[in-house]
Amino acid sequence: MKKKINIAIDGHSACGKSTVARMLASSLGYLYIDSGAMYRAVALFALEQGLAKEKSIDAPGLVARLHEIDVLLKRNTDGSICTFLNGEDVEESIRTMRVSSVVSPVSAIPEVRTKLVELQRAMGKEKGVVMDGRDIGTVVFPSAELKVFLTANIAERGRRRWVELESKGVHMTMNEVVQNLSDRDLIDSTRKVSPLRQSEDAILVDNSSMDALQTYQYIKKMAKVLKGEDSETGA
Image (cartoon, rainbow, N blue to C red):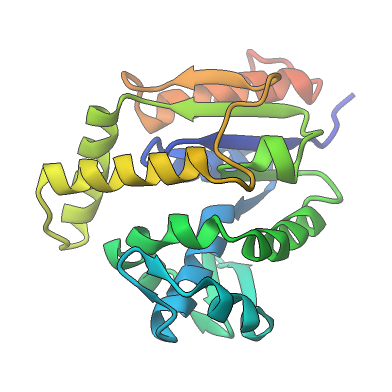
């Protein structure tokens, strides 16, 4: 008997979490929720309002204005998901290195996490959700039927992020990209609230030598078993 499940994919930056999660959601007919995009939207708000600069965050100022922030994910007709901040499509704006440089410290603010975790839990209440992030399996969906912790060595993650940025016309040295990833790893794994860590019941997947399609296929086999489907059928 087929059933809907929630799938939580956590892991380090530039492991392909969002790409794989989107592929899974599309193939399973599930809702994809990019939790990272939601935090990036808050980080963009902080930057635009002068509450963040480089790695310095005015946490009290941002907390005082959280009530002004409305983050919404909308599905396009082609199945892709766009992030809206206070009614404006900010999908491209939140993917810049400017936002990447402040998203981890913004995400470490307890009040920010509380606000967004409430929204995320509400989205997954009816099951049939694929969500990726840093604390999905440990905090947002601790009872998710399938939890995956995705990782890769930092050299490979740096290469992937560099290729992604170059394709968008953003030019940085490989050292700069790797340093940004290292900084984010440190902040994400050492913050006091909801740090990045592998939950005890999560399946560790190192995709250093796997591409997005191979990673997706590997995780989908596990999902199909949990859904009560034949793991050998379908892509």
